[in-house]
Image (cartoon, rainbow, N blue to C red; front, top):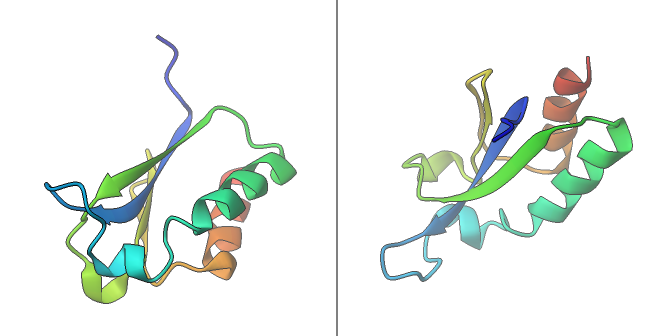
Length: 91
């Protein structure tokens, strides 16, 4: 199986019961996924996986996004922070 060059995780606050109850989800983390996908495509960044996660336990800083293998964490994610993160990946 081919591994991605980068893997971006976006907290979606899913709980064991399957319901999105946490801060990241309430602050629109799932709605940012399309913007993230478009930004990757617009910059020509290839071989990137995007996954939503359960709670990453940084609720006070939500929405939270993590980029691997760089191990770069972003809090209070919005379109501007996504642009900053993707610009770093595009270098």
